[in-house]
Length: 345
Image 1 (cartoon, one colour):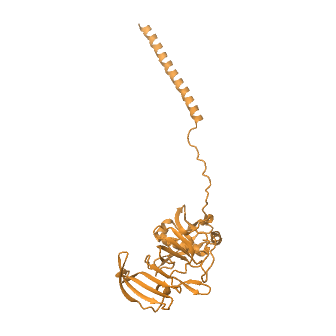
Image 2: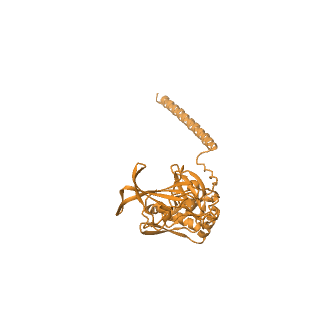
Image 3: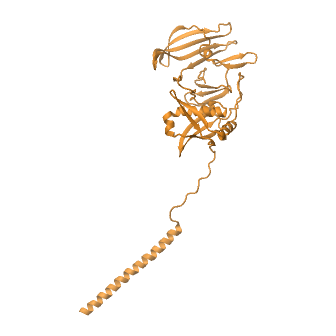
């Protein structure tokens, strides 16, 4: 996975190594610009067979320096994004028709990382000219810094999710056993996500770039992980050494499900120098449906119109009887009081 720039493009470029595809994303808006075969004009690509035009990615020493024995010369200072940088330059491939000029840009002030203090490499700029005189420029810029010396897995948090093609079988969920969401949060959700991502990609035999969009939820005693598996892009790959064809999302899901039918899938996460093993529950893989079953009709808890009519009718009768009783009581009282008056008068 590399981060590069070409003229008229500013953003992220991510490479799917085995399938020999590249994804270009707008760095500011996180919008997919294109999915295509690896572009041979990028500075991190080399031709390994001129007759067949077979290409391959450069090794790290070639990518960053183009030559192990290059001698760099100080070329002064340069301001990039309001940051003063020291520039060192060298030239390699001094043939009559091709050449590469490399600039290393370092910070002028020391960066302090743990016990080390030194100028930090800000970016590498390569200027290339091929046999036909075509000129290209590649900028490799520091995206973030992380000390991976104690980690056991490669962090792949940069995502190509906007470029993924999603189908019916893309939306999945799976149970993580013998843990809680609170425990996962204490480990670091990012670590859990990347460990799970690599485990799923390995079992499903797809690139980690096609596994994306994780979120976790505690459901009763289980932690459920939701994620997507991107469909094969359908793009013709570059003519590259040791390439392999993309498998469909359906094949990836079937392979993952077949493994989970037989056993749990264990995967490690690393917290500093400490390794924690987590497990995906056997037979817990599911596909999130595109159409949900209709919700059950709500149970009515109240009075119907008929019951209210009956209640009102009986209340009317009760009220009438009560009124008649009061009238009768008053009449009888007046009658007895009249008789008593006549006797004593």
